Image 1 (cartoon, rainbow, N blue to C red):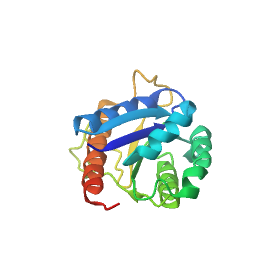
Image 2 (image 1 turned 60 degrees about the vertical axis):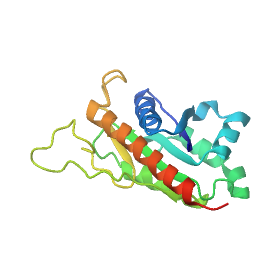
Image 3 (image 1 turned 135 degrees about the vertical axis):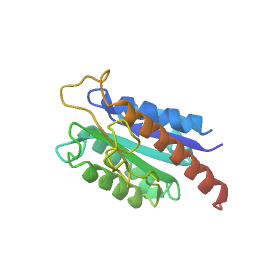
Image 4 (image 1 turned 120 degrees about the horizontal axis):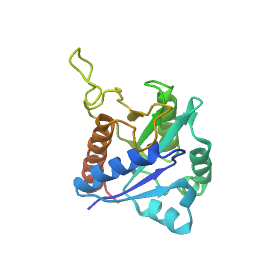
Length: 191
């Protein structure tokens, strides 16, 4: 059974809701997975990250990039970077913002760069976008991410109201995808 850690920051609860849906997808796919909020990072959490086969990064997109709280965690990951203890783990990422675009790709690109610094293997969405005239807001991958999971929550919506169910269903499917990739990779990689 692959071990996956979802490490995330959520400013208003929307990104936490996405993280929980990603977690549900990983668990449904048979992974041993857990959530760790960046504000709860301690020695035990660093050990969990070290022991993981896959790490999924999540943060809201604020002002065109990952939130400062997530960036603080990323900067603190220099110790595992120095020892390359995350090398060859699967990495993936997700972000939420108030607009459909909101420069979300900048956050995903940041996660990819972080993963590459650590020598990780990036897993993208693997889910085609809903991009036809018949598409509805609750279809899978309506926001159209390829490199990572993109979700949207209106600025005036509470975490109880948003993201919409289609984005949460996409998050669950994304979690299952990352769990499958992690299981395949960790079952095939050598020492």
